[in-house]
Image (cartoon, rainbow, N blue to C red; front, side, top):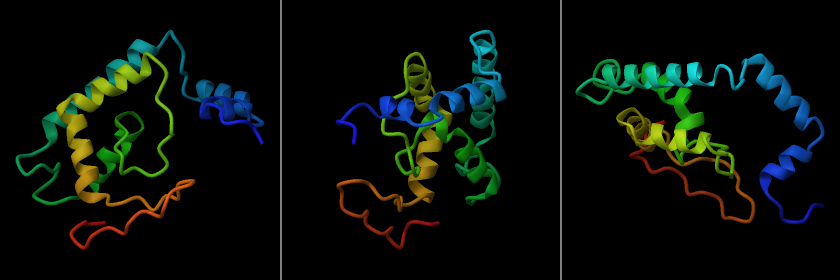
Length: 142
């Protein structure tokens, strides 16, 4: 058993950790060269989300729909709502953490956080050393 060390260190020491990182970067062409283009696409998506949310607070009509579910789910890797299951227990490295904080502070990021808060409920994720989470109240929708 490893001593109590950073989760990043543990992840990097797992068999295949480096290969997985390399394969992921290759598959998604994640390079310094295209970083600015990727950032611009993410910001454009957040602009679009901000433009599309209606007066009801939903993307389509007056109730939570698959459109809201999809938009909120696609942004969770960067916005990181606390209700999302299996969030990594570590902060992102800079400058990614600053960008994630910037996104979460935007109106679209706040919409994502609010959507998860209202419609996700309590995570059923099992946490080490902690008590089981309380079940969601009857007022929380699935």
